[in-house]
Amino acid sequence: QSVPAAYLFLSRAQRHAFEPMGLPPERCLVKPNMVQPVKGAREPERLVAYLGRLTEPKGLRVLMRAWERFARSPSGRGVRLAIAGTGPLEGEVRAWAGGQPSVELRGLLDREGCDRLLLRASAVVVPSEWQEPFGLVAVEAMAAGTPPVVTAHGSFAEIVTDGMDGPLYPPGDDAAPAGLLERLACAPSRAPSP
Image 1: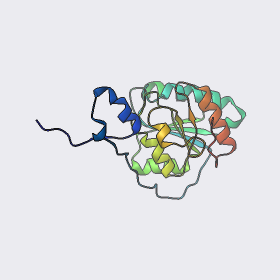
Image 2: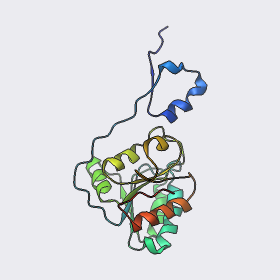
Image 3: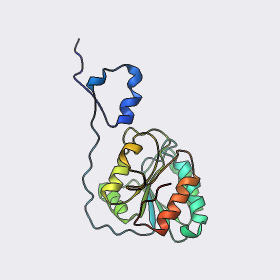
Image 4: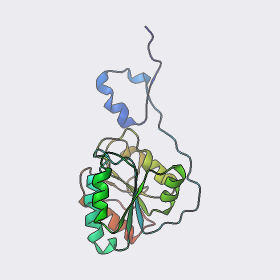
């Protein structure tokens, strides 16, 4: 019977999640994903982006509640939310967006479409409720020079330096991202901490 030479994990958080399996620590290595720099000129608008699957674990319902709070605030006037992706909650998100003049659904975008959206956004919200093994969208946002607003669990705390790359907030809390978006809208060149 052959024994694996190594077990590769995308993050320390993912490696930690597998510790109960009793894998030999000396064979457990972390090899994060890599992304290419996003090509193109950064031209941020009063635009917040969500890119990803439209599912409950990705935090869509938290994002919808947070956006309603933010859109009612003085800072939210004139700021748009672009949601790119497809998934099981698409009908629910489409019905919700129909009552939100500041929200636009983009559907599934190709790589170039995602890059254009990242370069135009003032912030990218990654509201995942599950502990992502590797937050690829957050890394892609940073590769475009766009601050990600992310939940403070899973791999995000490894990937995003709070207050420098972008702010972290507690998962499930719709008030926190709304407040962070208000601060980013007032100073889009900065990445505030909670």
